[in-house]
Length: 59
Length: 316
Length: 241
Image 1 (cartoon, chains in turn cyan, red, blue):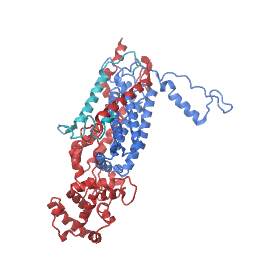
Image 2 (cartoon, chains in turn red, orange, yellow):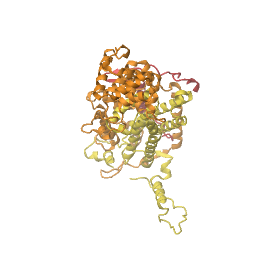
Image 3 (cartoon, chains in turn blue, red, yellow):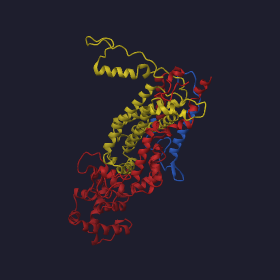
Image 4 (cartoon, helix red, strand yellow):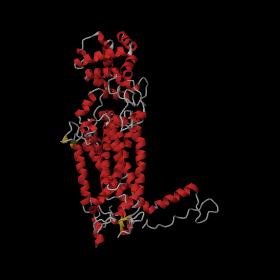
């Protein structure tokens, strides 16, 4: 695992390089941030709707 | 159901009045820790982290001698960002106001910087120089403020006409010793000695990078590089990171205000945004006491989803 | 109805103070602190092995996930501290630990915000839990500040830009006169000493308060539309404590 990170920018998914941005009126968001927030909202919704196992000690 | 009365100081029922089940707190914590560790190891291995090399005064002076010279001239004649900043660096301006409150001025000049001395005349005087430079320095220092302003003003006009290229400016007595001084400073900068000189300020140990950073920020190249990376204020830059890395999405509201009026055209924009965010932060902290705001959970019934099992059992 | 009945505090161990009798308060300040701590958080409240039945949603795991992420942030930060702030620029292992620190922070902030969304929609400040909300909110703001100082001490282009920009905001309200974001040494010490200590303390208080009050009960369902008299019930009364 560590051998993959032999130098800066040598990661399997290289996020260096020109950033991608989304423009919507006065709003400008990076695709990266949009993905993060999108995942957060999705996880929040899933946490609300996914059934919770009954009768187990899990919180 | 709930045993509350309008006058009970704490009318919520005891958490255990609806029954309980066994629960392993330590086991849950351990599972969470292992899960987060695994996720972190994976994300770090797959995506790594950004590390854009810093700009040095040397690299700036070598890549853009014109911008360097124009910036050094601005430090000398008092028109640079730092020279005209005001508190906490000097009294050239009053600083921003938040309505009637002149907070910056009240805090005072706690990190005094004489721009001409700190960025130009000091570094030149501290280095061993050719007789031509030494005499140019004493000529400049001995002249009156008016005479200095005449020289810098004339050179500034000429430099602007020559598109900031000092090589294209024809020599003239009107500039006095200024071109010699700035030319020598450029050479010192390109060798890297200015980076060290501004940081150490004649001493040895130092951890305060204020002078080299302010000098870089007074030029255009640092800002140009930031703009290319979408980090500028009018690009919601505060939220962003270089490249395609996620940045600080949690700063969205702080940077939002800078994009809209009246903030985006105000001289006191920073103070206004800080004031706005301070108020909103207090509102956030004291939500439980704010009528209307604290009622939103009942009005937007996400709670019915969260506790649907409980409500179902109660009805049975 | 108040907290569940607990057994009286255990009788103090035989004290070297001769003449101490049952019921007499012994042990001076130490004894008083001990009795107060045990009264506020008896062991089975501090580390319970049961939970209320209504804790039955995945939204409840985000508190502990936030805590776990916080510990990974501290741990990865501690490793970075071992070799100093410049290590990660020249070492692949160092760079990996920097990446661990960055991504654990992203996870920490994400889990914390999801936890916040859940707690807001649960109106979790009800039932004398306003201070739990307040410490949580202050932890959030403190974390944002701590992350900010972290970005400042990376010692790369990002730090150069962030410091020279942020100084304007802070200077405009006078804070910059005392908190100099272009002073690397000062920012590093705030980031690795002062802020983690303060934020850490507030997080500990937050968690102890959750243990003390217990998980907030569900919002009471109203069988009829809210009437003016009903508005004086749990939700509104609580906030006033």
